[in-house]
Length: 320
Image (cartoon, rainbow, N blue to C red; front, side, top):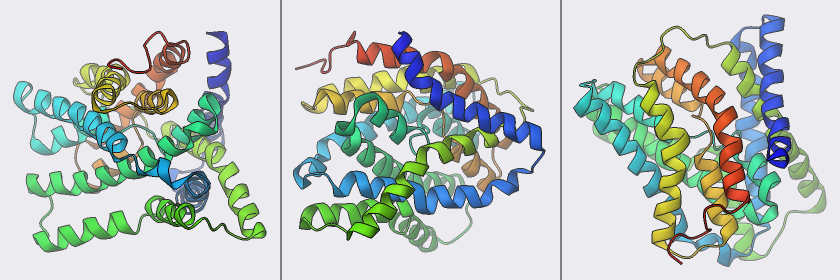
């Protein structure tokens, strides 16, 4: 367990440094804009390209893995939505944001660095597949759900076009597609270009975690939602179990792939959930509070999950 804590300390330490820096300097949240731009448009795409392009193409075609992982995520999404809509009588729009709170993990900012450090280079492919394709699913689901709720008054064809553009042109998707192309062709970038990619990729995790700490510090807790109790449980406990059960049922995967998927599922809620809530003007203060509190709770739950995974308390495949 001490090894697990030592592994996680740098990650939560970087978040804490960002949090303290934001509190100490008094800079507004808007000052983070260019760092976020660097992370989303340069550092993380470089990391995903690096991971995918250096992987044998045969390992990149496990459609059963990514479909099973996304199915497990949206199983939890559906449970959160139905709990809010049927049992608590919340609005369709509120339930949509609540469902993302329970199912949308911080896989982009925290996932790659943590999984690679915990499981080594063998985690590269499942990380890239999960981060890119799960994000693509969320990019599709968010506007689709809000259109169903009536919060998006645009014509349906414009909504569909917007979804296609957002998915097809997102830097994560483009960089992963380019990585697939390099892996399939066997061609690599010239040496100087590869060195630039390496520099950018090395900056991804530190910058992303620092930015996450700043974001958490500058979004104060004003309204703690009554739903937080079950949303936190779904995100931090049920979602990793859902991924474990569904992937065990779907197929036989390398233990590192299973462990990586469970670890990414155990991460706290993504700050993108607040961005979605802000975009549609729905559940904003409560989304901000939920992200902060679930992130704080993950300081306890994430080491436990990593210990359970690394010590193989749960077998790598429940149905071998």
